[in-house]
Length: 444
Image (cartoon, rainbow, N blue to C red):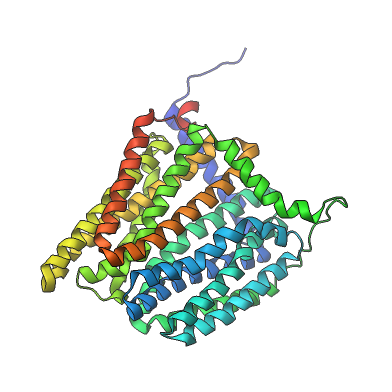
């Protein structure tokens, strides 16, 4: 007979944690010796960080030139609308071309268009037109990068590679929009930042040339092109059917959509809020930097909340994010009343921005994890397609509406209203039912 001894749960957890670190190191080391993976990773990092830097620089440039929140909304719409409308069909194109060229061509075109943006200066109509072109070239770039990963990474290292790419995507906002973009705008100005982004796109294009050819896979002879064209719509409808009535899937999707609404409004009205507290639009970095630091701290802080369900963290985090957005709006309104003493509220704004970033980081990661835990494995692609569509549509809608409304009332009022509404949605979600146990809790 087997001599079964009682096991210390904490010791077992520690051993498992140590084993996971060993396994992670054993998977990461070969990846960083894989030159093609490193090339692909550089391309993703350079284009994502550069894209966020460009978005920040263009936001400052447009608002400084026009002093119009509507103009900033239009800027975001010219980039996001093509993404929302055409992303479901990007795979149709990607499946029919060499993946390497599907990355080389968009990056080369984006580099040329970014040079045009840098030279356009304060010509807002030209800037918006070129921004549409950049968005159109970006539609196929991200799915091409994702499809290229399995071509350059062995199957047993694929999960770790995708994890690294996901972390890079999450970190690109903090690096590009919250750190590098604001710093370079303050020191050199928006046009120089756009020139730097053009250089990053040129470097990405050159590195793409070093990737191996990746021709389209052989497709069945009876696979009709017409059915391919409507397949994304069918899969999207299947995704909506998969989540319909499933509360455990619907809740994290609602959380992520609501968080995107607040983030979109803050992105559009951020420069206007900066003015109310006595800052120039180009000094909006004073608020964005602590926001970015807060995101990183919030994500790292999730390690200390392992005993709380991911769903509950996401909902409480969303409630805090909405409340902190409301607090930022109140501080901005107070600053507008104080006049020349408006900067006296700046320390409170910085603290609230840091806390809001931490709340957003916890909300986004926890909601994503809760969604993964709840969805059936055979429907992940379709559910994520629905998630991308809903989040993009909500972010686009709030971004487009926020600017014109703020021009007619005020930026603090709009931010306060959205913050309160999102906090109310989060409170409603938390009351619908108790938190579901996490996987780790149910197995311990």
